[in-house]
Length: 267
Image (cartoon, rainbow, N blue to C red; front, top):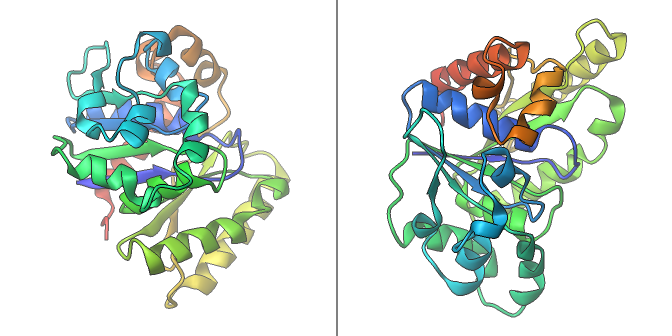
């Protein structure tokens, strides 16, 4: 089972959009997919058509009440029976404070995921835009990280801290964790700045190869998620891009990305 954290401490870079639509694309490809919402904004939950007010067991209760992650899963209402979501509620924001004195608090998600076997080929975790306890739990549970990134220089700020965090988690808590790839989102190929940022990221990954850096074997995904208004509209209808606008550029991009990820060597 591949466990992939969509992680970047910056907000608005495409983590939730990618988690939702990559998950739907992988399900369309015949994979059993579980989406885990670890963001207190619960945007992934609403994106997949689930009302947070209707939730009995959320990722908040998984972490604070010790409920197995498998018991929180809700099937997404769609043509796919292979897609499930572990939903979030806004109370999740209080988890970091409530768990401050709990021994092993950074491993709670992994423990609750292992408490009851999850039937999935791929787990995708939507991380919050921070380097706090919730993201740490995601990184301890995950086997790999995909870093969504916008192609502008401000998006590069904080990347070193992000890589340092992943490196520390790998060294102390999760030696199997690695960065599998950098994904450019809201991509505008005609912009000169886009090419410059892509070159800078490429140079960084080239320097990391052959080292112990967590991005030593990372790639820049060939697939770029182009800026597309349909991707922005789909969440308000509680649907994936494949349900909302199956002929859109957004659906095409995420469909190709899913195939690229399936063809990767996950190690």
